[in-house]
Image (cartoon, rainbow, N blue to C red):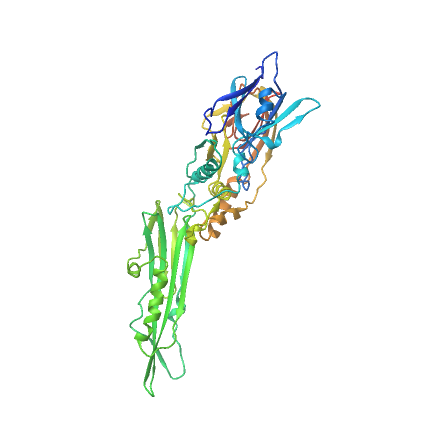
Length: 491
């Protein structure tokens, strides 16, 4: 290979008439090297807790042409935040291997040598540049994981006129964790009668024989809610003078579930003062009913609760120990939510905006997903373990060096999931164990392979080396030495 580079400068401002056109090029030939030096950082799959991937960086040196001096080193040719309105496409021997933006804050011109250093990044860099952007996440049924990237990109594109292309290759995996108790409401305390003082205490017939508990399933909004309601009325009688009084106990619970298993909990526990008649307790009954209606549950719905429900094919069930407790269960469904609920606006019912970057980070961790860019600069959203199906055999003669080692176990920091709606304690625990199991005890290799053109290697490629099959987790192309420098997992 001749190892000749070409850098095309493309108009990246979508509102300009010449958007997408090549405005200038630096082209190496066998006799004229316009690109003095060029280096590009490696592609990496993030480690277990590094759920936001570092962008790919490309740096090259050249002598500034008149066009470069006019459009990069002077003039108002930036969107904002040091982002040039010109983008680059970079080729080696006619094949594109990089596409991205120019960071004008890192332009470095050495007057003594006349050499200009230009630093470029893939468009993942824009996610950190615009890490302050917020979005109102409010879709009742939630968001598919790749939408976290899509909405973030949309918010950036609404801020500056450029195009960020992305490709979704993600598929929802399965994680069955068995039966999970999501809620347990103890009500044995409501079975206890007072005693003493010459009074006789019994439960009045206006008491409910058993609690009302079960699910409300909203198939349109893809939401399930567990409801518990119980009323007990105590009748107290005194023989001399003959006296009768009444006291009521109420217990209400509402568990509105987000992200499959993350509840937002509403509680009601009240005991009335002693009243002379049942009619005197009407106001307390009204308050009890209002607890439910104020939280979107009509009184009539308390009589239509169901013992089982299904959302996105995931089954929920109930159980009860008579006079002891009632419980809600997640019956061996997929712990990965088909749609997740970012932000707290679901809980507040207010227009509360949530940080875009944190939502994306939460999605990447929750679903063990990864983002990276392809040779053309498209951002790829993909499962971390979505390895290529084709196995590439590497000749022993092309293996320059190979070091095999045991990967260190890394305990994930799942606190980013707290940005999701509901109580994420159980979800964090399950996802943490899943990620530990995914990464634990993997064998890995550091390997250098000769001849870039001979092997078409990228992230998640499968290699067979000396009889073992590996999945590529990091790729660096050393153009000077015509070598791949890789990290890979044994699979």
